[in-house]
Image (cartoon, rainbow, N blue to C red; front, side, top):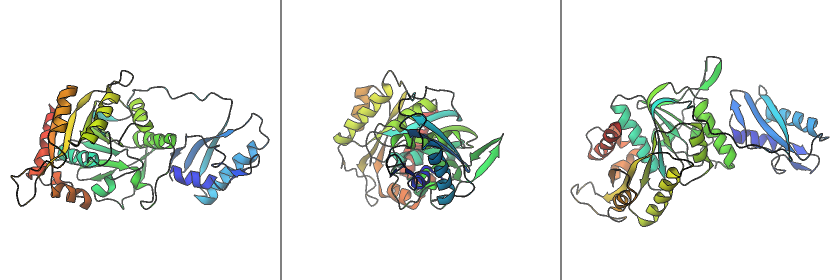
Length: 348
């Protein structure tokens, strides 16, 4: 069960006061929580002592059991328009037991952030480290394909009285993505709060175990998801990925500034310049600067942050991502060595 199923089921419940369904009426709060067959959420009513409250709550329970699963146990909390719903307080008691928690961020999409995250995770696992990888890109999950496990379905385990999700393990990396729980052919259309709640569950309700490195593949840009992660987990630092292209550098700068903001204050571990140059397989010694030259290097110098590496644009890296076999699996390959060097810097 996942949030979109809950939303779709509640579209079958009408609020008599408006004649519209609960979703169209804007009555569903962004606080859906799911654990096994238990689901909890809030419904916002226009006034206290609403005459339709009990009937709507009961109809919602029936809709969930009818359109999703008859075994569902629903906990529905009524709220009212005049209530002041407080924002969640910052909590840095990290639910992840890892020595290093590193977020991989990019200011814009299409710069190869997920490719970098996947290959760094595999490179660290190759070195014998215990590695976890969270695909936090709710609207564009790509890790199931990059790890060749699109058909995998995580199962639940009972530990210490809690029902937890067991991550998928591939290439020595424990990995989880919203892509395992949704239909890959359908777009994920969630409001910010729902996406943030889903991310919190993928962090808190998962049996990650003891890890050396926990990598988070963030969605591009700056959004509620980034703030949710920062308030939910103690980050060791952030790696920013960009291409040398000026339009990408503008957004990379914004990403650095966001994490360095005094209210967020997450260390920037460094910048990776991806697609730094093009090297054709038949001319391995040639470099063609398709997106500009040393843009990421110059930005790192300007912002006084480390340049962790420059990754070339080579066909084998792209093919590895599309085929679900990250290039880092090919130890000794020139492209794999670029990621290995970055991992060596992180260890130091």
